[in-house]
Length: 393
Image (cartoon, rainbow, N blue to C red; front, top):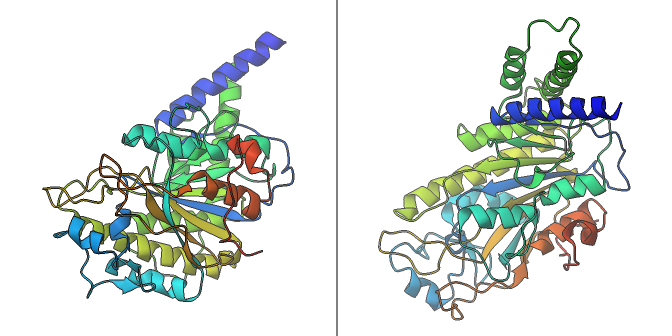
């Protein structure tokens, strides 16, 4: 009996690997119900892939070092959107001001971790596994969360990844995670892989059952809801729309992960960065409006993340090189808006010309775990990190 079970498990893993290689799905059954976690509250992670330049996103315009370090690519004072007497937003982020004024946008500054790694691959791995820089973990921090605190069995998936085939924080054994950009296309592609005949073949029948589960999941994720909200005509706008369709389906997911690519701005940064931030702001505003239509904005928490920031001093190619600490955005109907954390210390750069961090990125995750989902952050993160105050009860 045990050999048969093991063989079925092996067949299933191989089948799912083929689907994952095609960018479809990583899915495994999970029968337990939520153990105390409030997964009626949705988490939306927005990855700024390539390392967003924090200093030109949230601008320390009152610090004279900013203009000295960035004489060509720095944002001029007559263009900034002031937040207070020291800090401002990039002009492309104007759409977010409505959320700022409604106190539904929190900006958490100077986020990083000890002994930072400036490799894209390794640093994003650190962020997505919630590890130390000298620690290698195989499972993402959300995967560990859903293993310790399972989502309800009625949920179609623990999480859905949109606009990327990489599961990131959802990667891990035993996690129900779906990667898709369009639910209809997803269902169509999985059906194309359907073997023709299964008569008398137990192994093939098993694979067909797994595939049927995949197709069923895809079909359940597509609601066909006609939003009144207009979505931006951009890759990120399409990702936001796909994510909102998942939510509208009512099939149940605890987390979404969206990706906006292109932030590795080593050269000619000003125009590229302005366009990316415009896409981000317009997409986030559409996300807010669409979730408001669905009555889900008050139980959604949106959080950006990126592998690292950029170096404070501009380079000779009108760009910025890999850096360290950076700010991130948190949005939602239950967010207590405002500036959190310490402003960047441009007069205290390290020997490589990079910023010191003042807040460990795992405090963001601790806040999500403890104050959003109501579970133990130490169980998931392996240690306690101070939670922040940007979530209202």
